[in-house]
Length: 228
Image (spheres, rainbow, N blue to C red):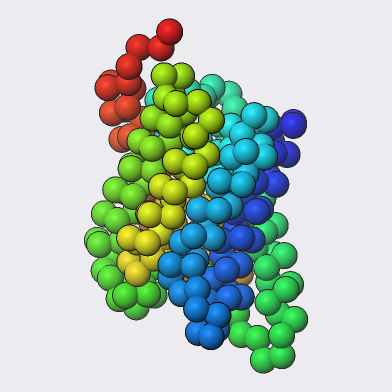
């Protein structure tokens, strides 16, 4: 239960911090954060939670990460569904808090609410195929970073930084394409409040990240150095 509470709180913070920066700050050009600021915010949520709850739950914060770690032999199958449930509920709670804050401003319109999308709902107008490839590849690389940085032979104490910086880089690459998911819990939380098209397109942001995570888990299990 302690692990599940940690995953709930961590995913709540990821959504509130990352999506919150997009909904509350990126909308104001005078603040100057733009896409880069949102990318940094997502990375910071992971860095801070890695050191806050990593020793409790492993700080997955993401169903795709949990699946990838399971495929890679780093996570027990019996914990997979409870972790995913805690992550999705944490993400929805973070989005609910964000909605309560954002709707406190006069004239607030939900709009896209930092949801993920493709086609006309892609920030850069990218196609469904482009979005699918992007999400698979970005999640694949994210899991390679996670599996490598947390390996027993990796330098100690730096995993949180490597993973957080990896997520920042992923956002810098893919925000224009899909608004960056690589995380089904993050996508679900925002789609619930955006509704309509966001819910219709949500399938891609479950299928692609999990596919990328499975491929990464299989590859890293093959090339991983022997643990001592």
